[in-house]
Image (cartoon, rainbow, N blue to C red; front, side):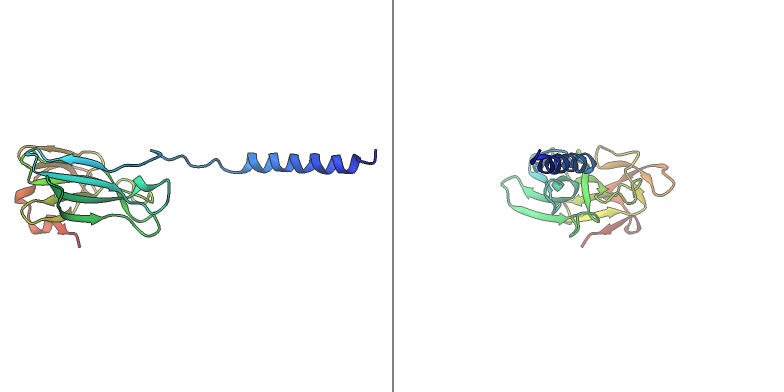
Length: 179
């Protein structure tokens, strides 16, 4: 019986370890273990838009994005980074496509931190200006589609009424150039 206190201490330590493990939250799995860039070739095959996972926290890379536009030969034309330093105040691309006339690359964003979940900003890149623009006063939370030649169906923000916009004829008050 000399070892009884030792055996009791070992059993108590094992029990405490098991309880601690059962209380600890399970690890958060990656959506995709190895998030990869997604490529979108323009209908005229002359441009490629690349959505690159950009979150700074390992395992969460796909929650924030960088969008790059390249020539068919691979030369970079324009890029915009939607990531944040803390991984909670940026945006990730949640849907994207080219307009049928290859003049605009349009995409929907989702907040990486969960704030404003009903607001899914719509951003587009213009081939003519080689710039990115945000659609002011619109969201793609409920509706998001692209039709010929360069129409985008979205919803107004905040009342969520359907709206269809022609990107080439947008007025200045409907879009904001991204820095």
